Length: 397
Length: 189
Image (tube, rainbow over all chains, first blue to last red; front, side, top):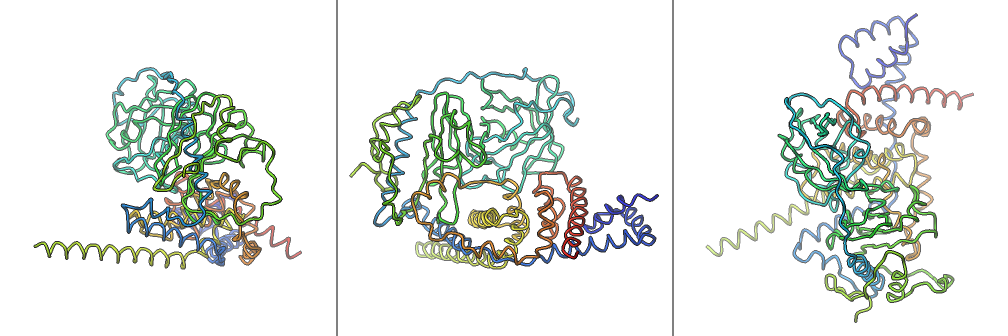
């Protein structure tokens, strides 16, 4: 009996025009004798047609408004690059919230910035590498260690040849058991390489495609040294004809451990870290944490209610972070320090008379600082007033 | 000589202004031409009006940033569908923290209207239903193929090899057919 499933697959492939002449002839011969498959092939072609003519649907109106705002923002930035921060901060009237948030930001920097960074022991789990005899060989050997299989981010910088990262995003690199690639730009992989570890412990990368100045088949050899907790790795190129890939990988990378499908780091080892998205307008945040903290959010925010691109960032005690899931923390159950960049004034226009603050809740910068000072692991300094692009923070006059 | 230099500078500045206006006009034209098709695609791919709208908004926002960074995609249509598909796949929930903040801070006067959900039903309901029974990656692969993207482009969006993508699309077409036959029978009998 004929195996019709094979011909159905061929008929489906024919829709995409991806049959070889031999396969096409084989299918054609079968279709002349099999009415069932002929009808199925006809249906498959019709389905493709229906998919092509899916009726357009008008999207919600806020998408257009947001689009226009984004154009306006970049028009302004390009027309007056020297004063771009100031122009984005053209504030009028009440900007209490902005000031509050700015102050909170300053407070957080003050709080975490004074922690002396504990030195992080660097372990080298992989033995020192030796040079491979034949660079033309494809990588053979063991899969990439599980400890390295993750998404990783590095500090924002420009790599010649690598497609520039999206605005405000650092270097983003991913490793699976058999591959390594950079994913700075959504929808595109760069330096897409097959990866394996040779017996000496060297990671061998072979470019799969011509990409960003790397020739397909280019073989690079690398070592990665990991921190004690395995959340920070440092790449070192031993040998790579693709200089841009070597440049991109010769850096420290931080493990992405976000629960919310973003690029936040999750549980942190004690140390100093850069933020990934926050404060594209004002520069990136460096923060220092002791053990027991997690970076639970670090992302850019756009959307229907926000008419500007902003960054937001959270630190959460690890015990609370453990209770978060993909949709974030269970409501009202976690402690976190949020820093939100808010480059425009918001108007408090909601009736909040029925919203009673719980007794003892911090409602001033000073009481918030006092509360934070009481948290284990935080060393607080007195809040200082500061000025960011000519806007004074709350608490100063 | 000074005069000429000054004149030259002014011309350059004027050209720059003109070019910027061109970028804004071009972007707006692309938005007008593509938004409804892209949203229909996102609805069918994500099967969730909110996620679809987020993905479409974010896609256009990225197009604007690319354009002003001097990297206007050569084929903007393919680029839009690919990036939008990728955003749906990566399922980025970018707004969670700010949303929690906003709930306390502002009246959401521009909240989603009920029409937003209703428009989804105007699409080819039978097809969209059958699509919804497929894996999300299969939906995106079929929809990207329908947009005329190359096998290579679809493969890159899905993070698979072109060969695996070809097989994947074939199997997805057969699954969609099964879904349509099941749905059709259910509706008729």
